[in-house]
Image (cartoon, rainbow, N blue to C red):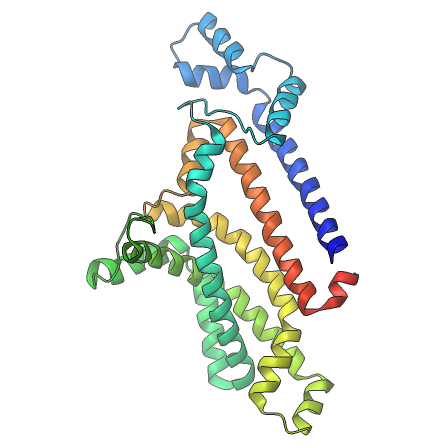
Length: 314
């Protein structure tokens, strides 16, 4: 198991390093004059622009800039924002918990709904299967910002059950915290659960046709035990792989959801930094996002290895 984890971590570190290197060169090549004028204003004279480039280190060779950034990043120093002077690591970590809360909540809800609906659709068939598939296609086809607006209109404005916008920390008020994240989590879940449902349904149908299922049934085991203890365990592998991809998609979907619900997460930071051209902050977001993706994939691999030892041996 330790070698299994070490291999996954090693490949993850290589992925993060490659992504950070590529992103750095794409962002910094030719950024000097453009960024300096954006910071100083279009009316700034050439001398002021050159001085700003020197202050930011943009007049140095690109490899020197990359070496300086990489040496700091290895030690946890992601630089300083060019627009507000805030430490990049602090700016990201202060918002990270909000986004992670939304993603974890949506993931847990997705697992529960996808498992129940996928198994029901596969075992019942008929009109139940068709309804589940239709709802899955509908949830995938409707953009998440429209789903968000619909949830706000119905549950916040019309019924007054939840807060329409804003975010309350759990430490301040657990009840208001739950009210502030419920609709965003539902919006992320509705848009993301459809693909996982289809994957669970297809995997369960494949397993139900195997010989060991007929053997278990011939021994008189209850159908619920056959399905939920044996079939679902063997069908979990492909569904987990797809769920890992879906969680990565939830990180991207959270950017839009946070804008709709005015939630101060990484989405707001990403939109602001990208619009301003705040390259150090964008680089920090790329690195942190890559780390999250690697950790999610590692967790999925560990769960798959626990369910199926052949994965570890492979």
